[in-house]
Image 1: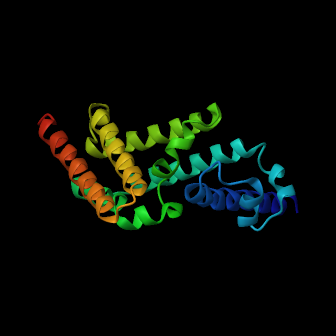
Image 2: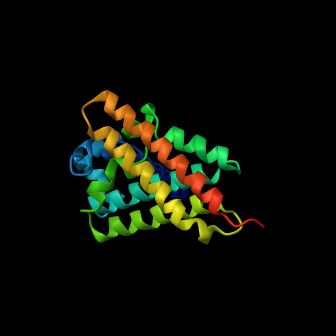
Image 3: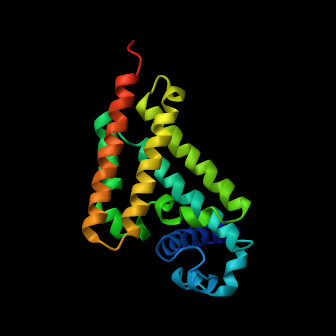
Length: 199
């Protein structure tokens, strides 16, 4: 009985995190109140504090969960440069741009995370570092530390390009920004490949 109750509580917590993540990415952290977040999960306000100490606590867990999913997606990529190019094109796609709720938390929430509590920023820092480390390992499996600067640059291009593409009001300009981001990210891969020491 106690085990079933524990499993139900864990499942409810997961549901709150999943629905809150989508709401945060669509409406922003500040624009998402606890009442709305709990309604999205099909629960009452009173149930919130059975799972989280505060809204900041939920934000930290939602950010960690979303970034962990990105790490898993990157880790599952097959080896080789082509897979990373496919990832770049998928990230900087019009589909991703037009559906922030289902997309990357970096591009959707970065400006707000910078103003959040240290707990949220610590959660973000850990997840973002893991993403960069996985990209570096994909670029240079034998020497990931040597590719970390390139991985940081690639991550920056992806996130900044998506933020700009979503911010502008001109659809043609937005498409141009995505296309430029793909070119710049691919060029960075070309530079990294050219500079990699030959064994």
